[in-house]
Amino acid sequence: MAEAGSTWLLPRPGNLWPPQQRASRWQNWLKRGNHWSRRQMQVMQMYGPDEEAADIKVNRTSLSGWYADEKGKPDNEAAAARERSLSSWYASEEERRVSVDPAKVVSLKEDSGGEVTVPSAVAHNLTEEASAAGESEAVDTGFSSDKLQKLSNPHVGALLVARDNIPRLESVFKIDLHVDDRLVAQPTMYSVQVSENEHVNLLKVPDEKGGAARYLSHLEDPNLVATITDCLIFRARRDILAGEELGFHYCTTEWAMTSPFVCAHGGARIQGYAHLDQEARLHLQRQGLLSAHVERLARNM
Image 1 (tube, rainbow, N blue to C red):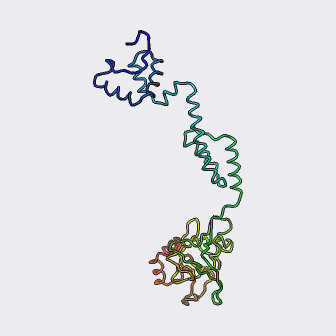
Image 2: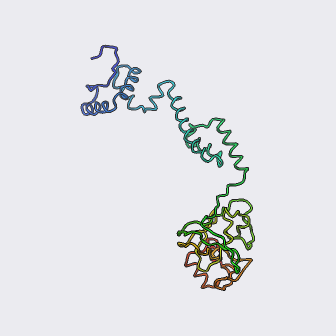
Image 3: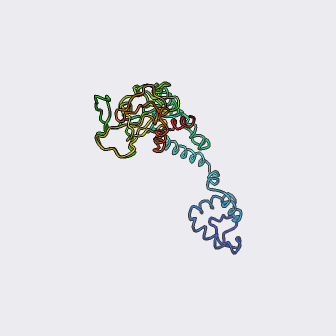
């Protein structure tokens, strides 16, 4: 037994606990080990030898709440959390500094409930970089495959063939539609329709960024198909062998062409989907080749 006025440093099984709880209380203390002892000592030094009050205090107080009783710890812990979060966040931002968005700083603060703040020097740098990125020209994400070869044909002019085998679904062209001055309202001989009222002028796209797609042939049985989202992408419909002429069916993207022509392969007059007969329209629909804007226009015919 402890002397009068002394403080119990360890919880002990005794008559202070109901019999059915004694064993479990002691086992819990053993599992918690020294960490429990430090918390118990701190609380019992505050509340004296009244073990029952101390036990209630410990069990009702979370670790963060217990830290609040010790001066300096909240600030130190919060500072460490801020530093860890900021370091992790800024490391990821460093990889894409060109496209830094000041809204990221706001999101960081909101997601953490205001706990994580960005130093003024860092915030100033991010703001300057974001402004510079906004003022500069948008990054062109387009490309042309290196598996292509340009040839000249006396009957049809320039055309593209596969230099190497191209597997099914591989992209051979990607044309970024977000770059300024590429989209026009009126079609031309070198444009591709990308929406109901917009066309991308391939003459304004560098060849290495997808502009060489203007040399793609019209094929009644195409080996490429166009997909249009924020980019115009031409993918292989099937495995393409080296030496094959590359092309797509022009009527899958063009509604009404301003430069119609006669197909060198089949002799059909190509003017756009709107000028096809019913059988030809159904053929393209069943193959799933139509672009979304052509499908929408067709429903309104």
